[in-house]
Length: 473
Length: 144
Image (cartoon, each protein chain N blue to C red):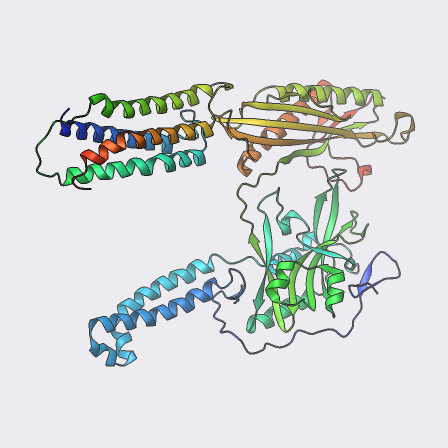
C-alpha cells in the first residue's frame, strides 16, 4: 500500500482506493461561535479565517452599534430616556433604526453580489458537463503517492502568466451547510474521468489531452499526511493541526480515447478537508500582485506548415522562406526588431531585439526593450536526415514566439514589466505577424491554408491555422 | 518697493506657479508633453505642492484679514524678491522642455530621466525655501 493509503491495481498503472476504517464526517456539532452567514449557498462563517467573516462581522458590529448608538443618544438628550424601557427607546428611534437597517441591507445586497468562489462549485460544474466526460466510466485512476496542492490547469487554478492568478484558502463550514457540503463531497469521492482539457508542455510545446477526476484521501496519521501531501505551512498555522481526510481534483494524461497514458499528475486541486471534527472547504481568492505581466511571454506556439509527400529539400526550402519572411515582417513596423548580434543564437532559433526605441505598439511616450525568440522545429528534425523513417510522408513545421519585454515612460527612465493589457497588445501583433508571413509563404509555394493536422501527429491539438503544401517529392 | 507690491507680486507668483505646475504634472504626465510615468508625476507633486500650498495659505490668510498698517517701503532690493522665483521658474521650464524634446522621435541620450526631473523639483523647492520663504515670513507676519 502506498503512503497515501492507496493500493496499486494489478495493472501497475492505475490504482483504486481500498475501503478501510476511516474517519467519517460527523453530524453537525453545536456551534462554538454564532453562525450568522447571510449567503444562502456560499461561505457560511469563519471569523478566524481570512475575509470570510465579512458578512457576519458586519452584522454583529452593526447590531452592537445600533444599541450602543441608541443608548448614547438618549442619554445625552434627557435622563428620562434612561429610565424608559428599551422598547420605548427603540420605538422612538425608529428612524435611526430604519436608517441603520437600510445601510445594513445594502451591505447584505453587496455581499450577495460578492460571493467568494468555491473550488467545489467549479468542480461540480465541470463534472456536470457531459460533453467533456471520459468515454469509459469504469476507468478510475488513483492519486499519486506524493501530491502538491494547486491548480492543475489555468481553468481551475489561475496561472500567473495567463489570466488572473489566484490562491486558495480554507474556510470552515458548519451547521446545515456542513451537512449539505458533506453530501456534495460524498458524490465526489470516486468520480470517473471528466472535464477533458488540454495542456501544452513547456519542453515539446505539444498539447496533451488530460482528464480530471476527484478522490478523497484518508490520512489517518500526521506522518502519513506529511509523506503524502505537501500541506501548506500557512494552513497548518491557521488550523493548528493536520487534516485527516482531504478531497482533491487531479488530472491524468490520456490518449484521444480517454485511456490514461501516464501516472496521475502530481499536482492536485484541493476541494475540502476534514480537520479534527471540523469540515473546511477551499475558496479561491485573487492574488493581488502589483503588475503581473511575466518577463517572458509566449505569444504563439503551434504548427504552421504541413508538408505532405514532400521532399526534405522542399520542406527545408519552405521553412527557410518562412523564417526569412518572418525576419522581414518582424523588422517592419510596428514590431520593428532587428537581429541580435551580440549573443550567440542557438540553432533552430532566431533572436530579434528592439532596444530602447520608441514603442510603436504602446505608442508615445513609451519606449521598449524587447527581445523576441522565434523557435522552430520539424516533427522529425531531431533525427538526422539519413535516418528519418522513409514511411513518414508528412512533416510538420512548428513555431513558437516568445518575448521578453520591459518598457519605460521616457527613454532614460527605468524599464519595468508591462501590464497584462500591454502584453496582450504585443501578443496580437506577434500573432498577426506570424499569420501574415505564413500566408505569404503559403501562397508563394501554392499551399492551402486552414488544413487540419494529419492523424499521425497523435495527441497534438493545433491551435493555429496550418498551411498544407503537397509534393513534389 | 512698497510692502503691498511685494505681497501682491509674491502671491500672484505662487498662485500661478502652484496652479500651472500642479495641473501640468497631474494632467499631462505619461504623455508626450511630460514623458514621466503617473507614479513619478505623483512623486514630483508630493515634493513641491505641499510646500507651495503652505505658502499660499500664509498669503491668503494675510489678505483675508489684513492689519490696518500703512503701506511702508520695504528696505529690500527688488531683485532679492523677484530673482529667486524667476530663476526657479526658468529651471523648472528648462527641465520640462529638455524632458519633452529629449524624448521626441527615437529619443536622445541626453534626455533627463524622471529621477533627474524629481531632483530638479526638489532643488527648486530648496532654493525657494532658502530665499523667498524668508521674505514671505516677514511680510505676511502680522497674521501668522
